Length: 177
Image (cartoon, rainbow, N blue to C red; front, side):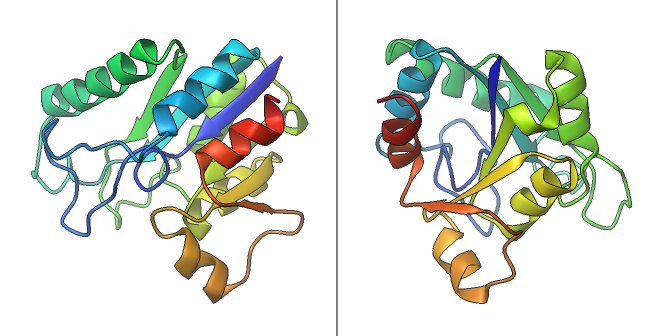
């Protein structure tokens, strides 16, 4: 099985320093739905892994988060693809939980649920924390330059072997030719 674990904010949709708090604020990065559709049609399983501290901060609730994810699912389905699962950490940045990236707990859970060995999965993200979580779990890692990706690349310190691609469309063009 081929498994891609994809961060949400900054990779699939535009990010905001003020958090994405509603389906109206959730805006896709151009081409991201088509890229996911292309990858899923090519046989990749797609899991989204996202930190959502806005829940712990009281900025939005679970039904609102689910509505944002329903919008994301619809968008990908309209492009002819699918997202197999969405995993999220609702805890505060200072909560010291195991599921919040850069810790690998959420990634380990995804691997367990999909019954995939870490080396058969790739974590795709725009932040160092995404890559650290994937790398710590034993996955391959890819940095995309959307969202915080340019700043992440400039700051350096990427896990060894991290691929760098312009966006999710470039990842799809490479993995699903």
